[in-house]
Image (cartoon, rainbow, N blue to C red; front, side, top):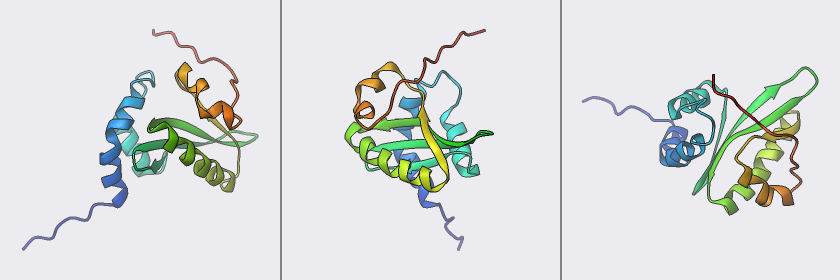
Length: 129
């Protein structure tokens, strides 16, 4: 009789929330695939924050003068994401982060983010070569 392989709980959650990750990646400029995100989480390069109907992927960035937590991807239920963002921010502070950052489509500036202290810092622009 062969043993059933053990699957890590986060992998099951990742697969369940994969459609939200794919939707968010559609706005990420083609920098990553779902597989890239999966491998990044598995390697500890990204942090995976599952919700009931939502997901957040973060990345800790160590700059010379400070550490930041970058919200790399987010998708799903907006109200749930608002609740989840608070938990991520608390965790980031515990990790020594001095700020949280995000880059996203323009519609994010009209969400709960402006109500909880996020400000537009700049504009992200890109030219395909």
